[in-house]
Image 1 (tube, rainbow, N blue to C red):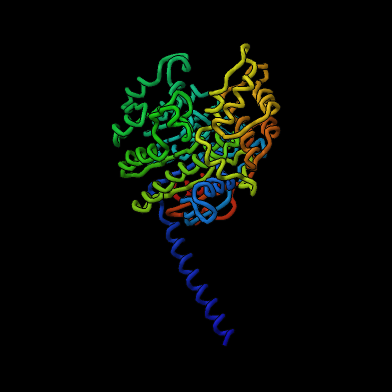
Image 2 (cartoon, helix red, strand yellow; image 1 turned 90 degrees about the vertical axis):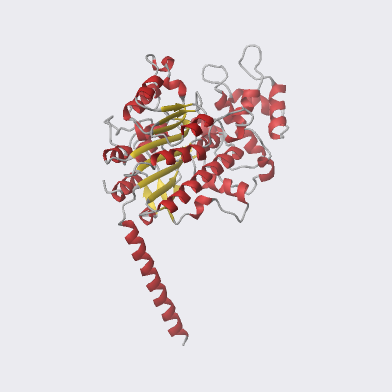
Length: 455
């Protein structure tokens, strides 16, 4: 009798599994009209777990963890076991492995077509969003072709010539005459019919204009933690994504959108656990909006992933969650509060100790303060960039509060500033989503989207 019951159970499981598979396969054959690629820069499993624990608690889940299809992605570049953002974005956007620092080119320096190129040729609209500068490595991989990621003025010119319908993020400096060493690009965008906006108020007023260029910061956009302290009127990733979809979805043929939560990576470089939590949660809110919009639309593929993992972050057992949650500003903001000595080759020790106590509730020793000064010097013997000093501040905070990450020494030796070769997860919703399950290479993302979109 028991044997018969087990046989019936197995037969039933086979039947229903077969039905589900048949339904999914039917879904695969339906070409999505729209594709939205959500990129959490530097967002590995550790970053997601840290954000989940700090935001939802031990038994909670982030929204992105509820998506129906999940896979893993290997991220190595053509010339390194660890990728930088330029090579990673190029692989995602073009399906081609390339060398670190390359943008939209193969290792030999030949330009390669990107997903937005295929969508545009098919009469669809294309959009690009980043909380970094829009000319930085990840967005550049989708819109430009340059031999190095550091040709930001050239990337800005290529954004102009590419005529992406929606471009939103930071980096206005690179569009202006000084960085261009020539004509200011902003009037040229206006001549092409773009509505140009500089804050979230103006973005809201632009409505669903068909062509929008939004540059909300001279450099990268502010950390979520610092928006209030810096009195910023920048739009959030969620607000930029909502605006972009409102505009792009007016095209009856469909659209492609790449929306990047870039500062997850920046926080991870600094081992800024609090910042990783906040930036990942903000990214997750944008994902939730996009997926809910896609559910109503019924013909949109949403792919949520990272370009690589940063600093090998782990949800260590020793992590002092309550102390980390109490921190209200980023290490970069803390770095800006430090007082330099007379010859600007070090920070005043009392200033260092005061900043750690005020913003992180940590009493550091004179020895730790002196070590911070040592690690804050650049190769010329002067004080490094604020964000680099923030990396060192964040590492000290992380060590005091038991966070798990690469050491400062490993980060200093790393050509990528602490990226890892760890696989990254991909979460998918929509037509053809089941084809993203299993272990993949980052180039497979391009190939699968291109196949599903029937290009």
